[in-house]
Length: 467
Ligand SMILES: NC(=O)c1ccc[n+]([C@@H]2O[C@H](COP(=O)([O-])OP(=O)(O)OC[C@H]3O[C@@H](n4cnc5c(N)ncnc54)[C@H](O)[C@@H]3O)[C@@H](O)[C@H]2O)c1
Image (cartoon, rainbow, N blue to C red; front, side, top):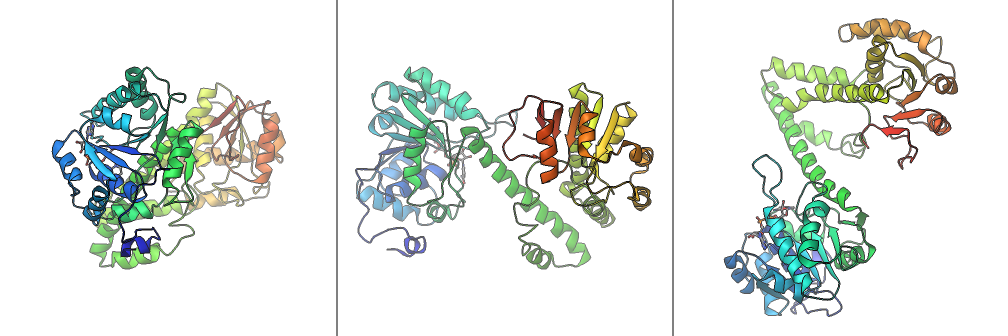
């Protein structure tokens, strides 16, 4: 076993890998950074792999067992595969589809002129795949590996394949979307120890064939729909870019303050409860409360004082306000005039109303003559609301009239709010509020800002803010 294989507990014997005839032969279309690595690594798992590219030089390099790109350990894996007749390469995509039963598609998806996705390579490959399918009479699975906008697998690729083949997806051939998460430079290492394996599918037969291919390297495969899998890939990369840019803005602020940004972030990353964790990462309502808005303003102000540009941090207040506007617009679009709010504070379990974003929504509606009632289990008739607003008087003086009118809007019980409304806006997620919302279905419409139930209710008057 070589050192790498040993590290990832993958059987890489000193003897050359052998074809496992129980495993499907795979064609890999596009022998770039993704395809060359897939070709090498799938062959190491015992698959016979046919690499396909329109670039005859890349094809020749793979045929000769040399690597078309610089990538650690790739040349060794490719030459092993070729030596043992596991890897071959061709420019004939139609022939490769006829010769295999699974096709991995990893052609380029560059940025188009308008900033979107250039589908030209996908379309031309899909047409050739369709032509190959037309000439064979056994079931075939196409595995889309390109990073593409959600919907593109089914709306762009599949129609081309169906048109060229005269066959039907789900019956004659299967489609899966399997995003690629490798990092260039450690691509082979990542293949054997993936951060995750995601298979988006709309047909069990295809999903099982692809899952069986990945089982040797990942026994916790995540199955989902094709569209979710497509979106996951985009979200991952946008998140990584956000992390890099956030860290760089922190560095730009720290440097003129002569604070070592690496010391700051070394501590930051040790918090795996709130900082590097699933916390705060589910779409919902705007952030608020006595800390987040204040501190975001303070850091943006600090950067200005230092003459440091931090567009990411500076954009947070604006994107937060957009979420408030989205919620307000959802109420307006409902056409109803009697609006009930379940939850007033920025989160459940506190009577702290300072910079609660739902107050901004209520404020707009009150000015537009909507009738508002509200219930918050933590706010009682004796809660001293006005006091909290002296604290934020520089930030939201515009809320004063609404805050003064709050005692009249408040109801002692949640069911009173439901009875007096045509639509309710849910801003907190607690067992009590879940019960209230469940009792409201069918009686009033619901605008859900917090995803009160894990599964989206099928109830017709239910509207989620980001789902
Ligand atoms: N490079 C990465 O690290 C990485 C990681 C994850 C996902 N991706 C995604 O995977 C896809 C491929 O990326 P890449 O970096 O390997 O691209 P690449 O440009 O390195 O390789 C694409 C290959 O496809 C070939 N090709 C184009 N049309 C073809 C056709 N009709 N038939 C056969 N071959 C054809 C090209 O000649 C080229 O060799 C892209 O969608 C990319 O966004 C890339």
